[in-house]
Length: 181
Image (cartoon, rainbow, N blue to C red; front, side, top):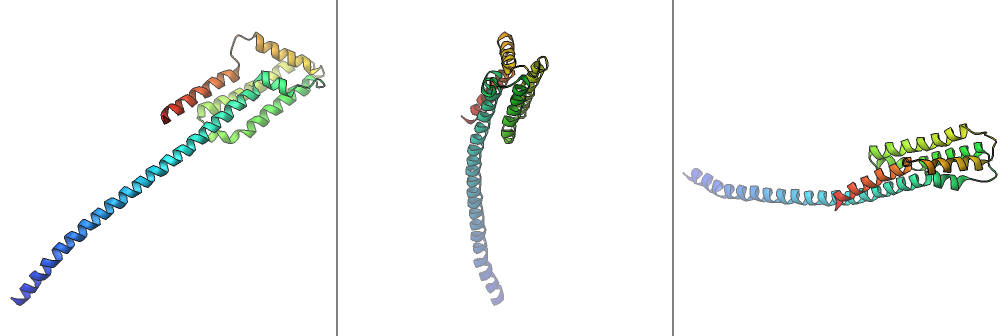
């Protein structure tokens, strides 16, 4: 009986110790999981704030790109009275392509729709300059191409591709901002 009493004493002390240990383990585990989730949420929020800033900067760059390649702005900026039609055409094309290449990395922050729109507008602006220049004497003064581009812009009843793109970009920015408020 002495052995049975010893076993009962061991069980009597072991079971409460095991219960206390299991309870402590569950409480500590729950606390650590909770702390880890809080840290993940805080990290996610910080990441979202950074990403939002980067996205907004990308949209700003896309707006600036559209403004800079808008025919009104572009022709006025690259035109030099000593140029020929071909010189102005080449200068416009190079400027558009350079501006575009400068903004290539922004595509990772904007939607596919905005990026495809930007690429399409770039091509349309280059094609417009090339098509108008094709109808003219390449050695004529650049003022003729300059005048022709301005006439086309002023006489057109349709919105310029750059203006359409700006609306698309602005609509998307409003949508992005509406999700963050």
